[in-house]
Length: 370
Image (cartoon, rainbow, N blue to C red; front, side, top):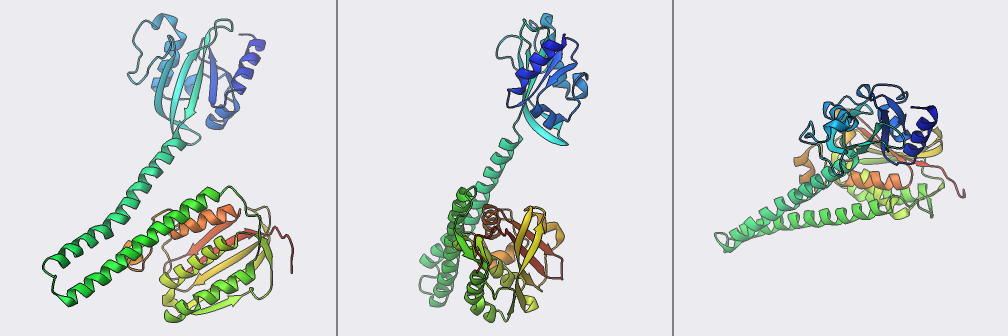
């Protein structure tokens, strides 16, 4: 095959949005687009196709397409199917980009005018698969979170209508439990709606300004009675001045109230809660100056194995304790999405027995400074 033909084939593949390679009659790669290089690495040309995609069924499909005499015979793998004559399509799990990828692979002959060979298109379905799995997990989690209190409430109602009909003490106790469970379901629904709203706005960066220290002073004042009831002393640092940033004030209040509330729930054993604001001259991930707000406690801390999953929806370190304290497992997921909307970062540092520090980092983006 001439260099001119190879250039024409390469130009054709570059216009395709999915990973695509072309091989000649001997199954050596003659062209690959940028998406294929991203999936399989660079230096793909002039290599046997089998060294690029080591999946037996895919290799057999390429051989089948290249050998027209085999088209009258059945496909070598029952998982393959042939839409038009001479084309093989399959769904397979392949190794690519250092991971296992679920892909739909289509092998088709090159146009006769170009010459003998084949194209291999690889449609990565992993993102769609992961999204579908997340949807199934989400539905299962919501169903479980609602079904548990509903089952308990139905049981109490049946008991109140039957054996405890005239038992005033039992009635009062059951009604108290039912009220708590109903309140928990109400919080769950409210946080689900909040999460949905935050996710829908995540791509729209805030355009309003917020005085971050003033906002933090307001949140600390609001949470002071709760801290006092938990016998926790709140110490603040760096929030006495004024610093304006781009931000949604309501959402940022939600972030810091949630983090302080969590620190009071799970870190109150240390009797201390710190709220500290500080400037970062250069934050590598944000590629510029930023402001960090640390929420610190001296409580029991969190085992390191849990830290990567803390912001997942419904993930709890201690399920029983979280439910007993009214947690829904959605608070940190909401925090993460709000911070993402502000183009910021959330860092969590903790160790068992050494307390926790939750750090919100927001880009400076100062519109005006007072």
